[in-house]
Length: 369
Image (cartoon, rainbow, N blue to C red; front, side, top):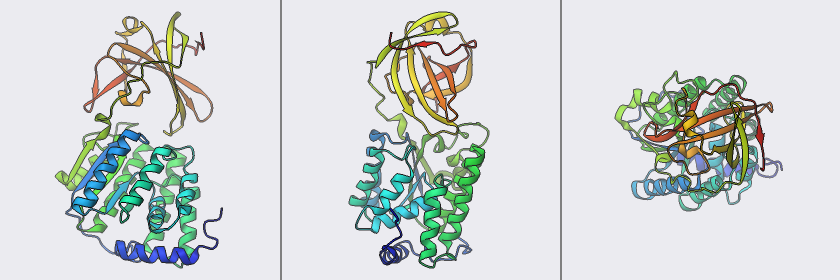
């Protein structure tokens, strides 16, 4: 499918409407100096593509939209992605959406739950304006398609074109370096740029919970303030943050898919297997979950590494006094085995498991026993 063939006139109409609605998102000069926005930022931390959380987010946005007159929704996407979403909101078909959805294949955004969320916004909150403040992860597809689109309508000197180019370069830099501090800083800078440009608006933002706690550091290196922390340094109490993952109904699943045997430090344990899921963090591809049965006493004194994994990351019910094995498959095909213990610890108010140190253990899993 070539999105641009036979659609130029329709695109120009969409663009005109969007310019009127957003008061110059496309046409205003990028060099125009913004004023600090005195509005309020309502941030909500999510677990990506969780239906329970997406339903709650839609309810929140619908209330802000219909009862408080809010129109600006900030999301964890690149600028080109969000601008295409704004065009799709005014379209009478899903051609743009289909293109975006195809471009996100293999990511957390490519899920039926996420698709239903955005389509519900289009149907019930049609004047929503999206602002993408992440680096553009789809820089080679969506990013380049958006630049091509702007050129096709003579907007290569617009504010949108300049921001999109910068955002694409941010995505390229992050893809090449996997520098999470760089990404966190750019997310903050991009958010501030978009928020201040609105001048006098309250906004809602939806981001992974690792980015939304004002006191948290970046999720990977734990060396720099996360996005919410950086926003709080500028806007203070105008930043209102809530972690929706703390309210999520944790999985009640107690039935394993199968029983395996896993050997740890020379001892064999029955291991309940709860499945495999894709992940999109740095060099990781997927992860698999086991619970070691009757193993807590053997490992309750093992030292922790400082890494944590909150309960809501697991596909099964977690109780205090359990040991878990998680195999991470990397993008190069290698497998990293990790061990976690549930001892009642909390991380920013959420119950979490903690990674524990265990002697070098080969991947000895006898499946299906």
